[in-house]
Amino acid sequence: MSAARPLTFLRALAVTATLPLLLTACGYGSESTDDGKQSEVAANAEKLSADEVKIGYFPNLTHGTALVGVQEGLLQKELGGTRIKTATFNAGPSEIEALNAGSIDIGWIGPSPAINGYTKSNGRNLRIIGGSASGGVKLVVNPDRIKSEDDLKGKKIATPQHGNTQDVAFLNWIAEKGWKVDPQSGKGDVSVVRSDNKVTPDAYKAGSIDGAWVPEPTASKLVADGAKVLLDEADLWPEKKFVITNIIVSQKFLKEHPDVVEAVLRGSVRTNEWIAANPEKAKASANKALEELTGKALPAEVLDPAWKSITFLDDPLAATLRTEAAHAVKAGLLEKPDLKGIYDLTLLNKVLKAENEPEADDAGLGVGR
Image 1: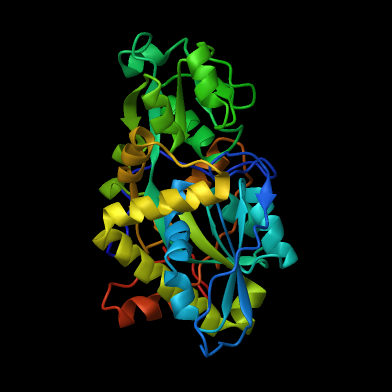
Image 2 (image 1 turned 120 degrees about the horizontal axis):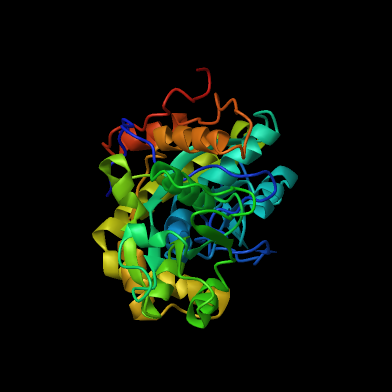
């Protein structure tokens, strides 16, 4: 499995936090679906301290740990007689709202909504308790119009949403090159076009954009339509790792049912181990889950490169989240947040120790720091 290990941040070219109420973990819209799916519980299985645990995640490959863990029964196995009930979301704000309302207890979610949810509640609603995925974000372009990075000047490049994780990452990258773009309008040396990932492929085929800085599988969908990868964002980060998906829990549920939270984390760690040991089976399992949730599986020419670009891991890569927040502040999209206490990795590290894996580091942002 991917080892969970501390990350020393060397430089910052960020995937960053977002404007309140404009957050999406991956920019796939704002709908949510309480799919009511409940995992099969083995006969006579012993319950933990709760009858059920309500888990939320996205029908998206960067949430592959949840997709595979639920699909293969790996999460349910660790919970015994405590039943999993799932809900799927297409945007971070709706998942945070569900967590705040008690509609879900634990969620797989991107860094931006986690930061925003934590700061908006003054640190009272959630904790990040584990990592799940890194990577899976690319700058893809029309090769007939853009041959090199310098060719981006004067071109129209899409991001999923104003102020979302990839939007600020692209703005940061533009600034590093010395170009000027107004972060609000998107106008400047490069035209930043905010476009929902669901419609970006059509915009690309119509010629109304010249490329996009987007997460998977949108990036690979564009490549299937003739685009070329100009930049993999992982190449901008130390060890080529940056947080794209974390696991969060409501503080209330964590306090009342730590045994259930620990079981979910154990299931997540063992799911990531299974993914690493069975990459083809895991990819097929995730795609089957997507087909059941969305009504359509991904074709191989999209699925294969998208899956390959995502690293599933247990380390929440806390140092990169700290940097993401700093760059949102620098961009004027977020007031300087107090993120102390956003992490509680106690149960994760207990699980990792039992699995003979290195402990994860909270970069000084843990409870009691």
